[in-house]
Image (cartoon, rainbow, N blue to C red; front, side, top):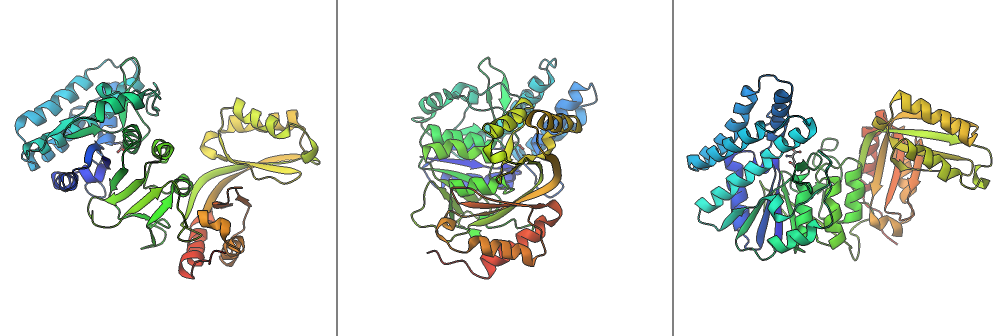
Length: 457
Ligand code: ASP
């Protein structure tokens, strides 16, 4: 069977939902359908999830929530009316929202998560009602009953390992089409908890892994994953297929098509992912697979992200000092900081981090500890860095990649602050000033995709 997940823009209006319906019923293998909350219909529209967050905030602050409530109900009502559903469906939605509004507000995070789940939950109710009206055997699935049990981290939950067996038992041999709301599950003690934003992708991936699906189809509003951000390069080269590792590197550094965490469950199970466009379902899309016999070309994509900083440390004879790295990283661990890369030389090491983790107080504390405990010659922090990644498994078998990449950056007048090529050799990372990020991506794209690919050895 196939698991198909549809994103917010695919479910933003009755017209969009009709397209989703055509896609679902055109393939009898699409037996599990995961839905997001209705998203934006046009550029400045609101996502239902954002409206629900505002609704929870107004209720929690004791303000007037009536206007937002009617906006949420109005969004669902325009959908149920457009789909020709009878009144009982919108009444069920209204009743659900009223029940959530009247929940205990003593824990703001718990309350907000319950409210946030209403976008996906009601979307699943509406979509299954529509399929049934057309005569299909479709059923709304409650994630709690089905076994989607998550850690109790409001707004950032993770799936518990026991969920997989439960979900498999509940879903695998069900008749008809199961419509499963994305983005949330339940804690062991029965609270609604949501994944991080965009988390319906994670739900779909968990279900695809649980039932060992033939493919996890992720329907969105673009034809494919592109080799570079289309906001930087108009009409870039589409990627027909890539590996999980390549996708992970690209989505880490700013590729927004797919939620970063969502790849984990399907990756572990080896279930391929197909990214497709609801508005153009016949386009070939992008397939993500575990392994490719021969990579189509050395570089599949170029990504960049800003918001990084680097802690640079120099100490004469650092390479001889046993335990230096461990003690340095322990200081970061004590401060609950995660790090991204650690490029190093014989006497120096840089630790690259997401800079939003570091406020001034933490920064001063860390610098003092590094000076005092590690007795270093110098330590300082450089902020506002961008990381640019040149990604491709085929790079391992290609000569001259680094030369071409650094040459492209030099020709664009960009100063490379650091470079890192992991031992796996499927990505090259360049640390540069954030102000140069776009220029760097443009120059690298020209080098690897316009001037022609490198021939593998
Ligand atoms: N509706 C949620 C959000 O806007 C989850 C999702 O769409 O994947 O973040």
